[in-house]
Structures are given as structure tokens and as C-alpha cells.
Length: 243
Length: 134
Image (cartoon, rainbow over all chains, first blue to last red; front, side, top):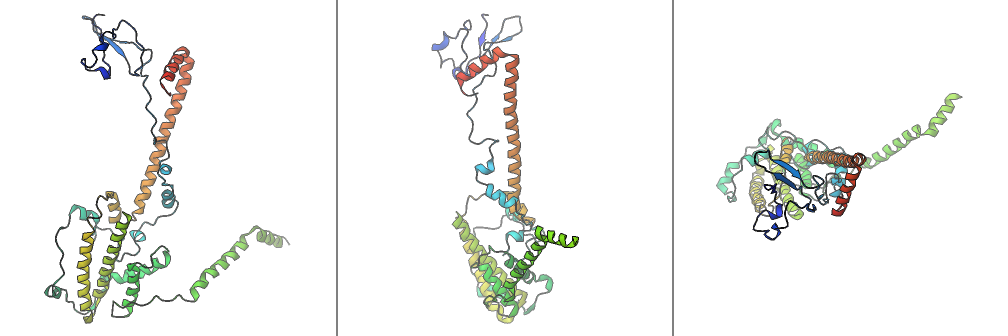
């Protein structure tokens, strides 16, 4: 037993740091385990295989760490007040197309960006030239943009196609800002289609008198349908059928 | 931060609108439209400069790369948020199941050990009580 070696405690790893406790650390006396760590004694007797002697009553009696505020068992959505977003996205059907997210954007944006080399990833992978001043074009430079009169072939007239689509979106979407520049553009676009002057802005077309009547008609129809399906009417119908 | 985004959004909207108007002019070009087109080109340069100036205001904005993939595929980026929420909820439920099961296992183990080793478990409990919550 003379060769018994105590495993040093973590706090007393350096012999210099704990010279006072040396006398009280004799392995001959049993000690109360208060640290929570597993205390073991390893006997290294020459000629015999080394054996481990456990001095405590229990193994692995460690202090349980303080419970964290957030654990895997807490509902993280409610913890971060994301229930509203969750209900918004999961209970309602989210439209797949990008144009549903950006309804005001002109052009066909639903097609993959790789097709027309307009992907955002390519913007990151091939960073464009930056830190260069952009100056106004001189008169001679602008002469390079002198165009011949005439319409483009239909396949290149993507703008007109989108304006028709946008009208539909405009009627459906309620959240659209009336004062935004893009909506003004829609008015311009309608004016552009009618006149050659693209800058001319026309006032918004007043609503037709027929339009507001439509929802009322629908409501009336719904009421009629409801009446048909209501238990009273079915009962009455049943009575009539019986007679 | 939201104000900065709004300013950028407005600037981008103006730029897009200007470009769209240019597209309309070009698609059915009339000779009298040349001056308007020239003006639009100059406006385009000005607006690009304005957008470039805003670069310094909007720094340290982290956007997940996956969002770009969604946009590049012509998909609604809200679907990314939706997928993230779904994944988070599924993972949360999975971990909650694990922790709940471990708690149940611990309680059952203590009960069974108390049946087989009553004296040792009493000692164990006394030891744990002296130390803090079990």
C-alpha cells in the first residue's frame, strides 16, 4: 500500500498550489466526498497488475448543472414569439411563384435565373466591378443609343405581357401601396399603350357602376344557397316530398 | 434599420420603374422619343449612383444563401421561411421527446433501483439532498 497514488483533484493539480493539505490527504483515512467528482485510488504494487480502488460509495454522483432557460423541451416558437409567423405561413397557402412575393416587379421573374444569366448566386460568385465612379453620359456617348423607329418583334416585348399580368395582381392585392412609384408606373403603362408619348400620365379609370353590384349579387346567391341547405328548408322539402 | 431598408427599397423601385419605362419606349420606338430615352439613360446613371451610395448604410446584413437559391429558381422566398419554421418545429418536438423520455427513464430507474437496492438508494438520496436538487 506504500505505492498507492492518489489521483489529484482538479483544483490541486499543481503540488505548489496546495502544500498545506498534503498532511491531511493520507489514503489511510476515509474522506467524505463533497466535490461531486469520482475519487479513485490506483494501487501500483510491483509485480502485480495495477488495480483501481473506489473510495466513495457511489459512482458518478456529479452535481447536476443548473437548468438552462431554454432547453430542447421548451416550445421555441412561443419562446421567441414566432407563433404569429408560424400561423401566417403554415395555415395559409403560400404561393410558389416569385411574382407572388414581388407583384410589382416587371418582367418574367418566375423563370429560373440561370436561363437569362440573372441569378443572384452569379452576382456573388462573379462580383461585378465596384468602386468606380459612374458619370453622366456625354452627348457623343448618348449618340450610341440612337434608335430606329418601329416596334420590336412580339417575342421581345416582355414589358407589355407583364403589364397585363400586373393588372390582375393589382385587383387582387389589397396591400399594395397606392402611393408607390411602381403603381404610378402602371398608370403610365396603360397610357403608353394608348398613346405614343410614354411620359403622359392618365388619371385612374373610375370604377364602373356594375362592379360594386357584383359582390351584392354574389351575397344574394350565397344566401339563397344557404337557405336551400338549411335544416328547416330540407325538413320542409322532406315534408313536401312525403305529401 | 428598417428605415434604411425602406429608403433602399424606394430607390430600387424608382430604378426599376425607370428601366421599365425605358423598355416601353424601346419596344415601340418613335423618333420623338429619343430625347425622353436620353433623359431616362441619364436618370438611370444617377439612380445607380444613389443606390451605390446606400451601400455603406446597409452593412452587416446577413442573408442565408439558401434564400438566393429560392429566388434564382423563381420561387417565393417566403417558402424558405416556411420551411425553416417547419424544420425548427420538427426538431423542437424531436428534442422535447428525447428529454421527456430521459426524464421518464430517470424516474423509472429510481423507482426500480429503490426496490432492488433500498438502503443504497436511501444513502444516495441523502447524499443528493445535501448537495442540491436531484
